[in-house]
Length: 251
Image (cartoon, rainbow, N blue to C red; front, side, top):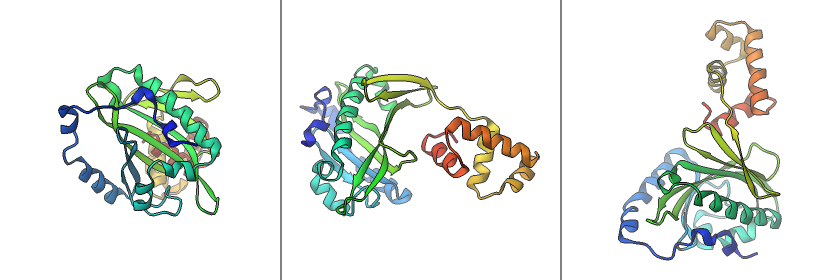
């Protein structure tokens, strides 16, 4: 399949003004520094050139290649290493995502993040399911996304899809129905102060007994709050709960 299908006509960047170009002065060094200090899997998309502007050295989503090799391949990387069904899904997500962005006031577009899961295969056809988050870095004066930053992590889900858009500091998020192409809004999960406290102590390595002593409640009470936490997040253990809470900025 042709990678050009991943670039929507709704977001075609044909020209850049002087004001557009001035936005980018020195920004790439900050991205590289962020990559070094966090060791996150990061890459930058240039929608005008239809290419990657930067790929971090973290090997999570590189399918056994080096960052330099992925940079050179550009979007043909997806043609080669994303399974066909997931590649078609990415095209649909792309179209739906830019249709969503068109309806957002230009001054608010940088506040939104799109997240979705898809598979990457290596040369041995071994696949991993990754989560992909994307947000704009620079917009043109017309409001088109010129450059975007993407962070890749292992998915906490079991299958591809799971497409959401969220706005910074908003109580709603939007889920994409891949069958209809429609966005459905729902309220974000809100954790109680006690649930957040218990998650943080777990993150620090404390046992249930140690947590109960720290927050001056019984062990049964800690177990009760854990069960409520599992129900809210749709998980079965604290490790899964922690991953979802961190990935969705619930802590």
